[in-house]
Structures are given as C-alpha cells and as structure tokens.
Length: 333
Image (cartoon, rainbow, N blue to C red; front, side):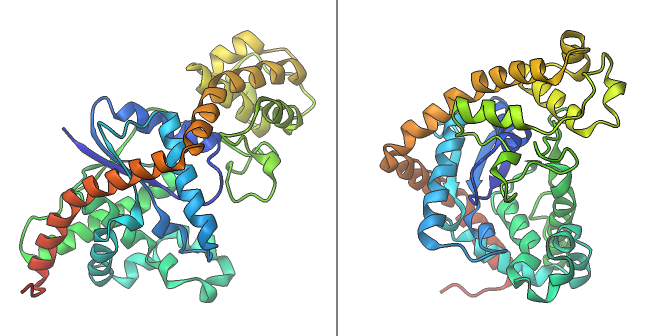
C-alpha cells in the first residue's frame, strides 16, 4: 500500500479552502493508502515569531479540526511535527545536499518575501528542505499537493536523487504528486482574484470551519458580487471572478460541477443564490465545528492522539534517519 504524507500549518483557523482543497482529500485517501498526517509546527515559525502559548493551542486546535473532518488516528497517523525529531535532523542533512541555485529558483520564497528578502529568516529560505525531510523520512511516495507546492515536490525529488547519487545507494524513493481530480480553488469572499487565506486580515474574507451558522450566513450575504444575475452556462463566469468563486464553492460542497449549479440557479439574482449557498455551507460545516468543539472540550484526548501518533511516526522515521546518517558517515558508538 502506497504511503502518503501531508501536513498543515497550525497558524490561524482552518477555513473552507483548507477543507475543500486538502482535508476532504486526506480523508478520502485513508481508504486506499497508508496515511501519515502532520500539524507542521516547525514550518509555522519560519515566517513570523509565534507566541508560544498561542502556537501550542493552535496546534491542538488544528489537530482537533482534522479529527473532526474525518482523519482516523486508529488506522492512520496524526501527530505534531516537532514531536518527531527525525524531521529536523534529516532536514539538516538535506540543507547540505540541496544547492543554493535550487533554492534560489523557489518562487514561493520570492512571493512571500518580495522586496523584504534580506529580512526573511533562514528557516523560510530552507523551508523546502524541511518539507523534503517531512516526506522522505517516512519513505513516502505520494503527496497530495496543490499547484503552490508542486515546485517544492520537484525539489524534494532532486534532493533524494542527489543523496542517492552521492552515497551510491538507491535509498530515498521518488515522490509522485497525488492528483485528486479537479481541486476547487477557493477564493476570498472579498476579492475573487485572491485565494482564501488564514493570513488575510479580514475575517469576512473566509469561511472558518468553526464559524457558527449565523456567521456563515452573514459572510455569504456580504460576499462581493457583481450586479448581473447568474449566467445559465459556465462560459458566462469567465470574467466574473466573484460569481465563479461562489458557484465553485457550491459545486464542490454539493459534489457536482458549475454547469449543474447553473442549471438550477442560472438567471437568478445573487440574493436567492446566496441563501441557498449559506444553507448548504451550514449543512456541511456545522457537524465539523460541533465535533471539533467536543474534542477541544477535552484537550487531553486530543493530546493523547498526538502523543500516540508521534510515537508511531517515530517508529517509522527513526530507523530511516539512522540509515541515512550511516550512509552520510556519522559515527554512532
């Protein structure tokens, strides 16, 4: 059975884009793959210093949300990244394998730093090396990724190939991106040209997975639209980013496509459509929010899942790290 690894940062509250673009797919993969899922708190400190108490609580909250979405910790593994030291130890080896030229080509670092590159942390610069270690320390061969992470996955394969070449051993496997069908690209409710994001300063730009029904209805009602009614064909959405976003969200939640949504709602004004969308969102997300809150009411239960998951993850990662260190030539006495 193919082993899959993926992770999510604990900064901010998980939102609809995380659910439709990642979490829902992670749940589906559990039926056919050996899954290792991780709250990547080491990655969370690469951009900004995190208040320690807040980071710890957000890590717990993200774990609870993943469990509420359907991650099964009995059959698969869920843990916090920093609890398995092999991630950081293999990342250091990969820091010495990866070439500066490779890292200089990483567009996400350029996008995140812009003209502020000299003030960026070294951790953010070598972020892709840690991501490679996250995957390869388990000899995982599949990763569900979005377009923004595909370049990092290519770098991970370059690192694996160079390590194998330098040591003369075919040790680390090649990683393949897992394509889960057409992934909905969930955009901001305030600007249909920008991705929905935890870092957006406006909470009105996103549907958080823990929003109550009233908050969901209000955010949908306030979502930016244009004055025209919905078109009857998908082609009519091409130059209408906000309309395309709302229709896409409805389609993803309902398990259908743009054409089917427009057959039902085309020609209607946004007032009517937004009511239907809000009702669908509440129907799908209310059970998740309720289960996450139930788990957080007993934080020790969430911590126990993470503790057991870390032990199971380390049991896989530690021998692989030990073999990698032996191939590098580290003395163990």
